[in-house]
Length: 170
Image 1 (cartoon, rainbow, N blue to C red):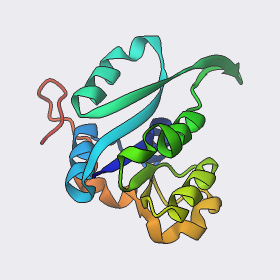
Image 2 (cartoon, rainbow, N blue to C red):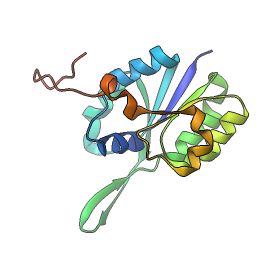
Image 3 (cartoon, rainbow, N blue to C red):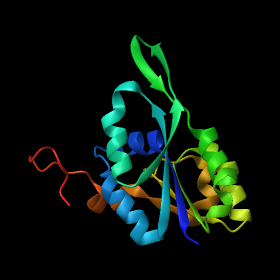
Image 4 (cartoon, helix red, strand yellow):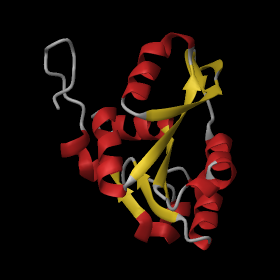
């Protein structure tokens, strides 16, 4: 049996961008497979009409996308799109896919996943918590031995434009 990754896409994306870089998702998928034997990587993501190109790229990189409808609203005169994926991620990791994997990687720094992480640890199914940076929720501190900060992997996972059709270097 293999390991599965459950990824909060917005938490990962925004957390890494606050540090001034972008994740190369092809490299991330290969890293998860090679380093942690991740057979299936579920990415929980908000469904936005004009993001089809992104969704196609993520699927081509090997991610299984689980879509959440989004809500648009205005905050301080700026349009914001919100797609809260927490419930879906917990449901997939603790029920839908639970019997199909040996160990789980939760990729998020969000403290809302503490109950899931506790459940996985108690059932010997937690491999790692991969956080976007060192500013993860204090609620995750009791699980610090499982935490890997993706910011420490920047040199191997950063997206770099080559100038040739905007593709990333291998």
